[in-house]
Amino acid sequence: MVAHTLEKQFIAIILACLLLPTLAVGWFGYDEAYNAIRNEKIRNVGRVADDRRDRLLTILHQTNARAAAFLTEMGNRCSAGAGGVREDCAAEALNSFTKSEKSLGGILRLPSVTITVGTPFTSLYDKSAIKPDLLARFSKRIPGQYRTYNIITTDLLLDARLEIAFPVSQIQPLFINDPDLGKSGETFLADDNGFFITEARYPSIQGRDRPISTRPMRSCLSSNSQNVLDLDYRNVPIIHGFRFMPEIGGGCVKANIDQAEAFAPLTALKWRMAGLTLLFVMMGCLIAIIIARRIIKPIAALTQATRDFAAGRTGPVLDISATGELGELAQSFSAMRIAVIEGNRVLRTSVREAEIANRTKSEFLANMSHELRTPLNAIIGFSDMMRSGIVVQLEDRAKSYCDDIFNAGQHLLAIVNDILDIAKIEAGHVELELEAINLGELVKACLAMMNARAEKAGVKLRHAGLDGLTPISADRTRLMQILLNLLSNAVKFTPRGGSVTVTASAGPNAIRLAVADTGIGIPPQHVDRVTEPFYQVENAASRNHGGTGLGLALVREMVNLHDGQLEIRSRLGEGTTVTVTLPCDPDDGDRLDTGPKSSSAFA
Image 1 (spheres, rainbow, N blue to C red):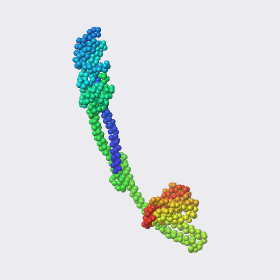
Image 2: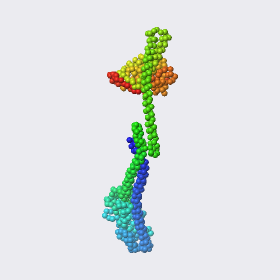
Image 3: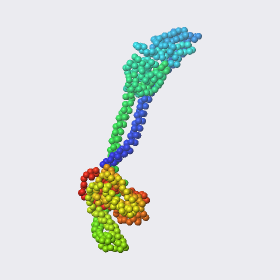
Image 4: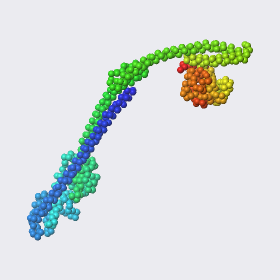
């Protein structure tokens, strides 16, 4: 499971290292190419619009130049002196000029005469609207009539003005389709009201029956020249290139191409890019899987070997032929496994030997304690009879010796009993005789037993919270032994004038019994070790109190036998509080459990 997770993580890391920079560079390149193609298409439309405007202006400039040259030449050829012009000569020259220009007709306005040739349609023009700086003026749209435009030229020396009318069809070839506009593109010329002057490619109501109302057309007629993306008069998205024409009194040269056709290469580029990206991602995944598995394989083998080793299985032999850090790791693990297996073998042997030695020691202590108690009981019994005067009356000095013998025997018997208890616990021979016990009464009985000793030591015994406690299921003898050991230690290490307080408190599932004294306390570095067998705190305050170091060790083991907990808190010079927490059940008061409970081996 770990190997699979690690493999997925490696694949993700390798993919990130491979794909992210490449995709970033690819996306940047695609974006640059996309924008370059897009902008080039837009510029192409703008170039076509510029070309049509420039070519139209060139035609109009050339026509105006020819008209001006005609006036000059006609004035020289048909001069009648005194600034006059011969009418017949001027009419002939005008007729010849209009035919050469393929115009509809013309009007030559002289100071003395007006000469008309052909059909100039001058009635369609508002003469006051014709400004001198205009190159041409297009006729207003009238349904049913074709559009024309006039070239107007003046000669100040002759005081003459020439107006030539041309059909719009003469400039229509300028607005044929351009190769740069593709199959859907078109160019046209619109007047200052938004109507077509030249023919548009597509049928539409706009531009013919009513003005073109698109945003680009309105922008163009507001004297702007731009390249934009927007809808056209057909409501089709196109690229607009429009150029305002102030030279004809307002109007607009338009070039456009459908966006669908113009940006078709971008769509193809997008799909090619998507395909290449997908291919690259698949190749990256394959490469990442191959690399990750090559890296993970020895790690997975090492992980499995570690699991087998932790579970005690032999497992397959690791391949230590790999190079690099993984090979060194496999070699180190193999060497460690061999060393640990050998160490475990030695350890198991040592544990077996230690168990045998400990069992032998426990049996020896048990036997010796039993053998010691027999003569000790005789010594204690006879010395008690002698000091009590039952056998013979003794002098005070001899009686004092008997008292010393009795007290020493009692002390030695207590030590032997403690050693015997330790030996039994180590051997696992202790069984609890459980019964329902009123803890309050038991504590009061133990306090009564310790009262004489406490009075002799000048220590006051107190108790609190002993009434109304829930009965607990415990071994009465062992529980009394716990309390007496704690009280004995508390009295022993409390100086004269001090006190020992036993406090009980009940919880929902446990009873806490605390024995607190105002004694000399325990140094902090010794608190965790005072429950070890035979451990004694060596300092100036405790050295004069004696003891074997077995009391708290026995208390701890007996508390453990009752599934309880032992807690010791102490401050040097202020006193010690030993708290015993025993489990209780509210139903314990209603039943009596007399079944034995064996102890665990003493640690």
